[in-house]
Every structure is written in structure tokens, then in C-alpha cells.
Image 1: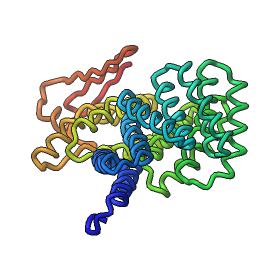
Image 2: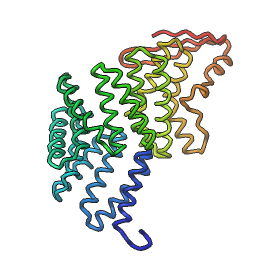
Image 3: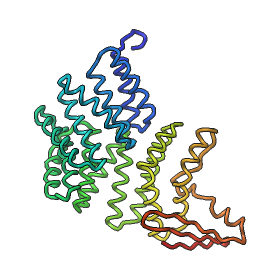
Image 4: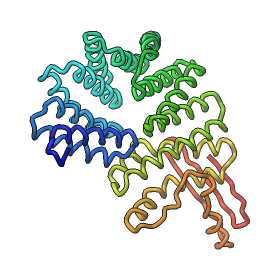
Length: 356
């Protein structure tokens, strides 16, 4: 396209590449390609393409949980969709803005946008958009403790999901149904849809949805008092998260955003699960793992040093070596959160004592 001077197709190809990188969790590359696409769409006056690219850029920041940036791009996209009469784009953007407000806990505004998305879906007979709007409304109803309305919306969406031919959207729909079913106490249904979401996401290479599916399955297993299975799923979840962070290359800002807005919770959860199952030494390794990873990755990026920080239990080593060298010492390790303190006492002879 560059060789023959077809700027329109060049811009579209940049956008398609951006979407591929977004699905793979390579957000820096996704952002760069979408920005190239945007520049071309503006240059050639393609308002529809410009609007779609704003949506794509918003989705990159939404994945990073940078909701204010996502909101700004979605609002630009919505203005263009309304201007040019793009009803499908309008409905999709209402849905995305609603999700931003839902994550910001502004439920009244979220519901307004979801209602608009639902109205558009009916007007243009877009069944997939209809299902996504219904599930989004179910999330809002569930958040305000109207479980009956949430279940009704969820059941309506389920009848539509079976018609869905878009695998990416099907995975997202299954993820939402699984989450809602878990909140209703319908654990078998939740397990079925979360595992289906995980399987589809793995199949199509959508790493963020796979990560979220594994995390929700972990929480489901915890709610069923199946701690050992929960740990297995959580280790897979953390491994997927590490892959996504590694793909950000040298972009410390994106890595920090992922860690601060989504990555600390799995590590903390694993620490608590290991403590609850009596694996105090492994819990301490994981606690250190969460603290050390930003510095380790910074050193690896800046100095091409090899990072040994991993969620793989076979790589957890080192703390006892330090303790053994200080034969006359006792080590106290403290980790605290808003609501509790974790204490480890390590002795040179290998004994470890834990209190919570």
C-alpha cells in the first residue's frame, strides 16, 4: 500500500495491526499503529475511519485501566459516529463509555449509556450488541443489589450468545455471564462459562481476556473452598499477566499501569492462599516476587540483564541463602495492608514461623 500510494488502505492496515497487537497484549505496539492509522484517516478526511480509530485507542487505555484516557477517546468517537450517522459505531461507543463509568463506580451514568446502547441494538437489529448491552445492564443491577433484574437480563443475553459468530465477543459475553453467575451463587454455570471464555480467549490469542478468565476461575474456586485448585489457576493467571507485562518491552509507564491497576491483586491473593494452606515459605517468596518485579524488569530493560522474577515455583529461591550466611541472626519480614499484617520469622537453621 505504501509503494502504490494507497493511503486509505495503508491506514486501515495500520489499524488492523493495532487491533492484533491489542489482542496479544502488546499495548505499546497497538498504540503506535493506531496513532499511525489516525494520522492517515485525518489526513485523507475519512471521518468514519477516524472515529473507529478513536475507539481502538480508547480500548488500549481501557485494557490498561486508564479510564480517563479511554473516556476521552470514546467521547471523540461518539461525536463522530453521531455526526456521520454511524448507528453501529454509536451503539458500540455507548457501550464502551458505559463500561468506563461502571468501572469508575458512576452507576447512574453507566446505566444511561447502556440503555442507549440497548436502544441502538434494537433499532439496527444487532443481536450481539443487544446481548452485550443486556449483560452490562445486568452488572449495574447486580451492583445495586437488584439480583432479580440482573438475572433477567443475564438470561435474555444467554439466548442470544448461542447465535454469536464473533469469537472475541463470544469470549467476552461468556466472561460476563460467568462473573454474574458466580455472584448469583450459581457456581456450576459460572465454572462452565468462565472456562469457555478462557478456552476461546486462548484459542484466538486474546491474552487479557484469558488473564481475567483465569482470575475469575480462581475466585470461584476460593468461594467453593477449593484452595489447592485455586492456587493452580492463580499460578496460570500470574504467568499470563507476566507475559503481558513482558510484551510492553521498555515502556515503564505501561508496565507500571498494569501493575498498579491490575497486577498487584493476583500476587497478594496468592500470598494469602499459600498462607491459608500452610505454605508459609512459598507465601514469602511470592510476597517478595510482587515487590521485586518492577525493579528487576527495569534492570533487564535498561542493562539487558536477565530477569529471574517468575511465578514459576521452580524459580523461587534465594531467601534462605541470605539467612544462612548470617548464622547469628534472626530475620523478621513484615507485610501489611489496610486491614491486616503478615509476619514471617526466619532462623538460620531453616525454621520459619508465621503469624497473621
